[in-house]
Length: 286
Image (tube, rainbow, N blue to C red):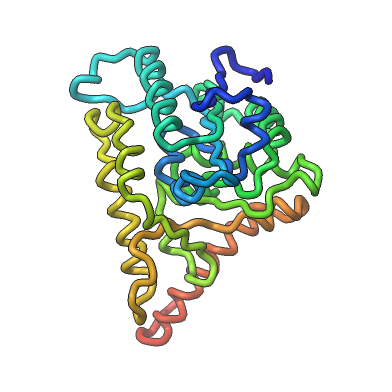
């Protein structure tokens, strides 16, 4: 399979031919950076880990060259960091028993230049080869520009598929903005409480980040536990760890649906729920 960027790669941990590896993938994660999927798509990783019928596939859009660095990694050049991040992602694929890993090797600036359509075209190729049942990607309300650009390309690619090629479920997951603000009826709580040791190992693979100044290994399980505890105020916890997602399936199944209106509908419902309580307990003046 040929992609737009020189240096784009396909890695299959168990050595299966790429075409066969793609065909077996049932749960596909599409992320902006190395480690994004281990943070936001662990629901799929844990579900597929020991299954013979379910396989997790990973697509990483960027080359990792712009990653923050400190400590022993402070002197690393962008090229050094990109090579290291690629190796770390491959180690995660081995540890997580992924069915296939694709690293598309775009610079972040290239991903954000959505008008070229190159990332979308690469994703269409992958999606047609895989035809996953479930897709995990970023959510359109994320605050990281590269994340938002990736989900834009992912949704555009999914909409180009024939109806029978589209996944049955598409999740837009939290990373650089939590989704706790969404109404409980709207958010999708993903139970990520199984295989904590696997999750710890996957996050620990990214030493360039953990030792380089970003403690994702602490923040990620912390958010998962906080989501579980604070999800329901009048009920005991049904899960020990939760990751919140936005259901993007309607956007994919109905290409005529306006994405902006759909996402801002969640924001409007949040605003309305806050306003309702303010009016109930305070006098709100306009």
